[in-house]
Image 1 (cartoon, rainbow, N blue to C red):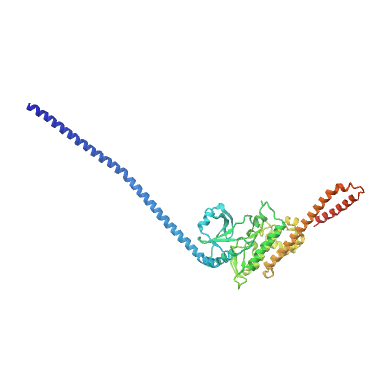
Image 2 (image 1 turned 180 degrees about the horizontal axis):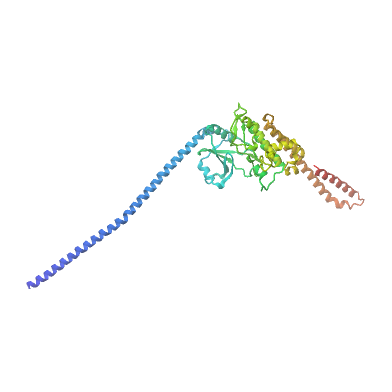
Length: 453
């Protein structure tokens, strides 16, 4: 009995030991699994932590770089603003505020947005002084933005004075200067936008669809002369344009003249009538011949350039044409030579010979000839030229009104005669019919008279 119990107890003890050993093994396995799982998690988590750290570092570095770049750009814009006379311009604007309209100072961001970051598709033209872009401001105003090629830092104060004075010019035939931007290395100028193209295009473009008649050419010349006379005589101090040519005379949708491109303009000190300058604007065909001897440009230099414009309006030829024989390439010389030889009628544009009165053409040509005098002192002033051209224009308007009045009168008489013709010839004694015949004969004489005008 004792032995049996002992054996049973031993078996139970063995079973307990086995269970304990199994429990130990299970616990060991569990710990082993936990440890291996932790190792896997650690292996997966480390790269993620590193990646997130790198991302944070990159973002932080980019923000720091952007901040530094923005700060550097702001400092550069501020330096350009001061370098281009921004502080001086602000002072002058404050001085004139409320009394007259002055120029606005645009930010570079405004003009970039207006031109789609100065997209090449926005380019209106390229000239000797720079590139002109078409832009639309935030208030939907369409403007022309001129980006100059060069900048003379020695003349900043003079440039600011010009901006102020030109912004104050209130003339119907001058392209209005709206303001400028001084946050770039070279100042940007903002003008009103004129959509009709240039006088040069209307005279010389091969595919021009609209030909300028004599009346329109006379009006354009009178309006342009009026602007130059205004600049020379009515502004204080006087302004010399220095770049008068057909490409700088814009035409609006009604073909009204708008003088543009004052990039070469100079303000004349009140105690000077001429000054020495380097020519940066005037195209050779328009340049005053006296400049080559004196290096001086005066108000009479604008008169000479305008004389070339008048010759272009008369002949339809370019100021300088290399397709012509060498002696005839320069229009001014060719025009004077033709007039001296009595060959003016042979060089006129067909549009003029078909429409204009010979005496008007001759008077217009004589004005051009006087403007093209090689001696500046013998040229007329722009005020004199403007007065004479306006007189010619008024005569043309009166002639046109007179012709139209006569034409209307003739049409009315013909209409009245036609309405009474049938009844007149059926009168008993025929006297009424004879009266109508007499009236028709008089109408025929009026018509012949009009045809000969």
